[in-house]
Image (cartoon, rainbow, N blue to C red; front, side, top):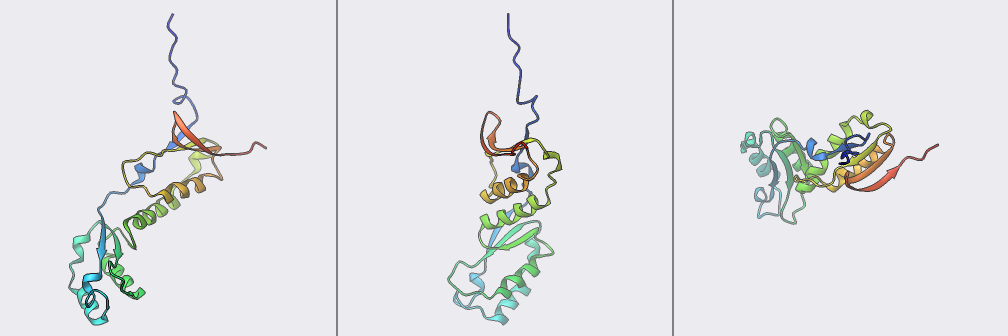
Length: 170
């Protein structure tokens, strides 16, 4: 007599969130402004503005851009702002810093806009393994957003999850 195999995970109220499903399409690029500086260290306003005006920003269409300076130059805040204004009609997002900081900014917006009503009073697993560069901060932000509504929060896979939070029964 064979015993029927029952998939308890499929039959449970367990809900999985995979941040990889929210990963937006588009190239991620770093734009180093050091070549636009005098000897790589001094920002001359007129030269910098000329370079901004002469650049074909359309090459960054639908890209996510992380602005940075690879030298120890002191860059005034307006310089990055000027670049972001020039990139705004083309780029999907512009930040200052590393590619990881860019991904963190992207996912901060995604999680901020995420509707969590469907997770109310349910056990939730935040899927951990991903093939795309999901920043660690994204998982933290998601757990914090879910905590007020979820019955429980786990990390990993249904077969081997790590419990993070369980709502107290009143």
